[in-house]
Image (cartoon, rainbow, N blue to C red; front, side, top):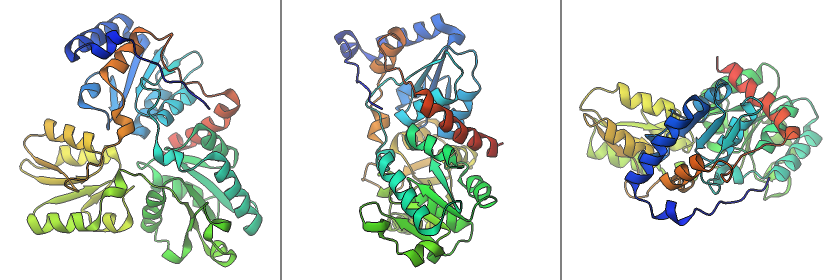
Length: 363
């Protein structure tokens, strides 16, 4: 699906933060319950303050599916999140992405056509009906529809364990995409041996997996990753422990296996937020996730010592950071010109099936 990027009029580009904030608040008051602003945890601090709901992709997807009063849903996040809101929303609701260029490099690492080809290759070599696709939320609407059409479901880092359990109750093998690290870390929690986990690399013939290895594999991972969480290395944890033995390390499961193994706690974005909130005053916590969230946690929990795990590598999601107050203000004041996210009905039907399975297992 193509999209266009709105060119902000000069009045928004030159307006100061205070003026923009005042106009946003005025528009929120004017629209009342007709407006719902969903804000991901990785957004800038100045954007988060205007969110009616703040959460991770799983939590916000649930909210989008249960908000019948909202006429306008403005999703301060990235495109795949806004697509999910449109898929799960009621007919007539309009979903906007304040900055049309806010995408997801991980999702882009799994082009639909290449995933379809890989699926055909896998089924041709091991037979149909044995494997189920699990698509991470960080994927296009087309891949969500493919997943639903082939009996699978969507998962997030909040419910990947439940998605694996659901799938193994029905199928022998899982085809997990696009994040290899979340898939591998979840498989390890299930006790699946390394020699039963195969990495499908679309750049190589047959994905780089011979027939014997493919037959043995219980989990087939796509060659994809999050460029933010890939920045964290085992030596970052070792350096922290040498500097402060009392430090607690918490990381996101999109980090590589060796990082996850060394951490004190591992979990979704929502898990990390709760971990910090429940930690005793005076705790020192080094966090392996997106920089804007860490910054906000440090500001809101000044009784604790909150640090970014890797030091100076700047693990920031530039796509999340693209949404500005000017973008939000323009969208609220000009819904007829904003970036309206519309998933075609032929894609929406099967994608909704996969997303609803995700929500069902999360109950």
